[in-house]
Image (cartoon, rainbow, N blue to C red; front, side, top):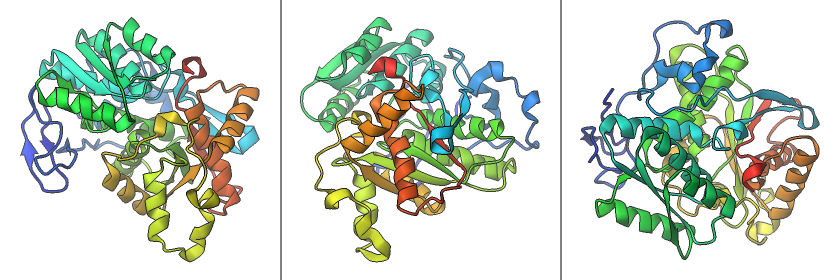
Length: 377
């Protein structure tokens, strides 16, 4: 399966191959030209072979399974303390939801005959790419911040990948990786730019809908940095609707880290203070940077336009929360048996914030993904 790439902004198309571009000549991220949609009705859950993991939905995927570790069909459990459901994407082989995108990205790389992949990451995506590159027998170099957590560096190194430490900001890490890609050092397996990654994260929505007998929730609340899960979920729910397997779209509600919240800041700055917009930020965004949720500190999301389109299309939103609020949610999660890493807690804190602000009704049917294991903290 060698799907072509195209630019949704200008329409340019690119042939697949190990030397395919990682972005359009116009600077916009590329997507697969076609989104496969099944022409059969939705199956009963008992007819889905969950042993195939997320690849049980291969009819929706523009990539053939090559590099897999049995990932997918993570548990969906009641979270009684929050009147919601949690989807435990923290139990993937590498300990985070990023395995959804890593399996499809490395499968694509293997299909194309790629020998070396490069990725830039604050931790989870790099660990996932490293692990699936090992599974595919492909060399990997992972560009990471110089102060990346030791647990995530160890995961990268144990998989046989080479971590490349970069001093400076998270953007400096990306810039260094892109420079290496443009110098011909490898294929860009970026969780922010590579469309194969989003083909994997869309399976979050497919699994969730199947586990709920094809009834989607009123809303899904996710952490929001590059929008890897947020935008993937939107694409998955959209594909289900187009296939006729579901009859509605949930509201997509993102939660960013205070101080590094370009989507939330942009949305509510654009509102000009109308409709209660002054209520949206804590102390008018004067709070200190939320370093607890370090995994979503992205100043320039590569697919910003797509995130905003998804928010508009689903009557969604994005807010920013501070470190104290995130820490309080993390402590409650740990006390109730959900051992997750700090960035996961920001979405759970966001669920409470959205309800407190009247954006979600108290009885709204809501799902929150828990995105990373506390064992990686």
